Length: 197
Image (cartoon, rainbow, N blue to C red; front, side, top):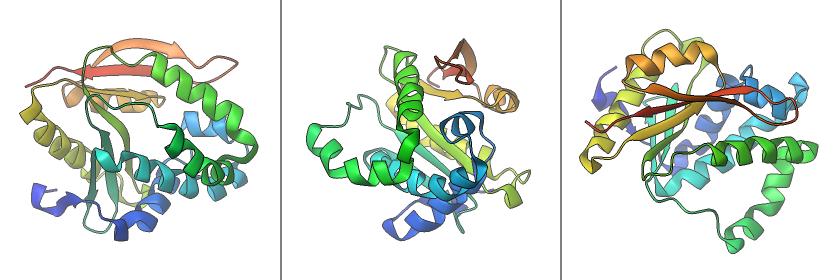
């Protein structure tokens, strides 16, 4: 995957990226905790990822040519959503999460609690369509994002609830900084930080 084949996502990519991420995260431990019923998960994940894609619009949203892979990055110094933002997105969030809101809030709160205190770029979401996995698309997309954030001279941070992803991120220069569980029976996460180049 060449850098030229990875581009900034546009509004026209929103539906395709959200659908792809829904498929990519269908078996993710965190999403399986939020939506225990696989039928509900399949239905709700694309809606949730569409909202998360909108939330990350102030950062960097990279996608491969046909939306087979995407990475969503939040810029350093991100602030919690404003009251106006939350009110405007309340109904779409309820529509996306339904009765899963308490579990989703537990995951979100635990993620926020374990974020590093220093300014950093946050690799919020990285996903590859299951039919396109194993082709280097995800790794290439993350590498492109790391190359772009390197100009800021800040670390990059992520967390993953998928243990098999830890080695991939380590191969890209991330190191495990902590292991933790979401309260009330939630999944285990690995926090990972990559120093600036």
